Length: 186
Image 1 (tube, helix red, strand yellow):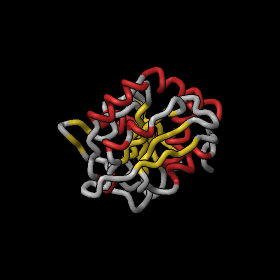
Image 2 (cartoon, rainbow, N blue to C red):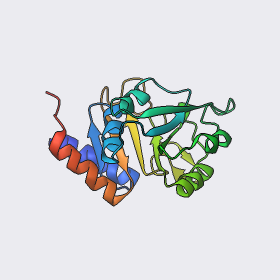
Image 3 (cartoon, rainbow, N blue to C red):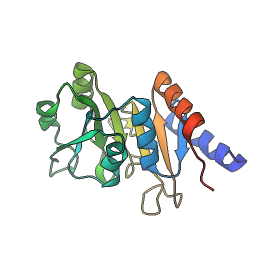
C-alpha cells in the first residue's frame, strides 16, 4: 500500500474507531468479501430492502445466496422493520440495513431480531458517510458496513469502496481472504 493509502486507511480507522477498515476497488467488492468471509453458501438467504441498488444483491448472487426483499417504510425509504421477522427462515444468515439517502435506519429492533435468530447485520452506508442516529455513527451499528466512494456518493474518492468490520474474528477472516485472493487493480 502506498504512503497516501496507508494514511487514508489510518484516518478511516480512527474515524470509525473500528477494527480494520479495508479498502477495495468498489463498495460491492467489500460486501462480497465480508459475505464470503462469513461463509455464505448457495441457498443461504439474505434479507434486504426492496428499494436498493442492483449491485447489492449481485454481490451475494455470485455466492449463490438468495435475496429476500422486504418492502420499505415510505416515510424513511428504509427497510420496513415490522415486516422483517415474518421473512426469517432457518436459511436466513444476514440482514442488510440500508441508510437510504443518508437517512439512518432505526437499528435497535433489527439488532434484537439479529440476536434472537443468530443473524449478522451488514450496513449499506453508501449514502450515509457521516450520518448518525441516537449518537451512533452509521458504519458502527452492525457487524460490518460497506461504503462506496464512487463519484456520486457523499464521500467521493472518484472510485473505490471500503469495508468497516466491527468484530475482531470477522476482521481476521476478511484479512485472510484479502491476503489470499485479492488482486490489486493495475
